[in-house]
Amino acid sequence: MFYGITDLGTFVVGTIFIILLPGPNSLYVMSVASRWGVKAGYQAACGVFIGDAILMLLSAGGAASLLKAMPALFMAIKYAGAAYLAWVGFNLLRSALATWRGQDGPARAMEVADARRPLRSALLISLMNPKAILFFVSFFIQFVDPAYEHPGLSFLLLGAIVQLCSAAYLSLLIFGGAYLAQQFRRRRRLAAAGTGAVGGLFLGFGAKLASATLG
Image (cartoon, rainbow, N blue to C red; front, side, top):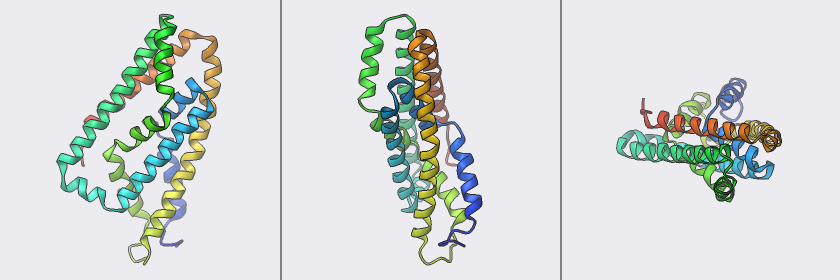
């Protein structure tokens, strides 16, 4: 046992598999890097790191129990998150349509507006998912010894491992996105198709979150 962590190896393997699953956080970071470069990609990644850290702190502080005890609060946060994901997807689709039609002015205006706030957007995407709070509790609790006298330290170490794995994965996505940006600059309609596909996925993420339950 390592500082109250019962099975560190299994936790690391499970964390890696979970992080590799496609979701709005990683997809947004990659799309930002592909459209505006490595610097903007890391700004978005910082938003994800901050959001996940806040969710882990809320989980350790009992927010999961509050959400279960107050279904109305869960529903409010859930629908707000779904609406935000849908709004991001809609804006991406608008930008893709303008690019496809060769309307560089509207597309550029939308991109400039979005490029100013990748950290804030990524933070909101990360935070507005109440299911994430419930997930962190249900996943972390399996690897913390209830008899350990400092469970807060165990949660802190587990959270640090999640953040390190996430940083490594998002870095790969950022540099992969930067490579895609080079290809997109030479192929306008390919860029439009890629942006549109990401927009469609965000609409799907929003619909999935809207249908999520506490169970």
